[in-house]
Image (tube, rainbow over all chains, first blue to last red):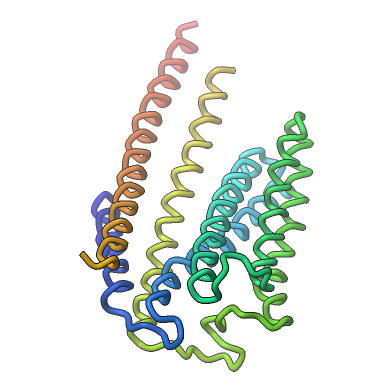
Length: 218
Length: 50
């Protein structure tokens, strides 16, 4: 297992080297193209982790097992972290290519609303003391919050005209990226996803141990 | 040194930091799991003696 982890380390270093020295620069974006290899994986992991959080919320409502509530909270914590990273990397990119960190572009507005929705999830959790009530209400809220994710990430930016570059798979369903760029991009996407799953696994493991310890103490 | 190298080095340093932090967390979890297992087996033993 430790070998696989060191393999992940080398893989990520290769992705970094690839992003800086192997992949060609995109027309019109110049040196700023490299931000793409970090910004898009952050946005992808945000969607993935909010989905995982919503699945755990559904599991909690079905099985009424408090473990799933903690799992869902953990996934959403990571979701908020990656959403923030996507916003920060996005605004750096925006500053370089559009001239300002924030332009209230449909994509920027969407992620801002998404951040507010998930920040409210944690406000809701901290406002309720009774554990069962907190778990049930936040599970319902989380499912409703996740319904807005595809709307804000995939639908809104396609309805309104945006400064944001076309998504990887364009409206004709084709990938128009250069082969070398694709290689680095997909490797970056996979490597970041692996790092995310490692973080999630560790956090879930800590929850399991905490619950076991509680059981032993009682 | 070209700024691109500086950015690359900073990126590698940040990734190395995250990687070793995660490895350390792994080890701490392993230690904690062993301690909890020992504690639970101890509890079972004392429960059996009573």
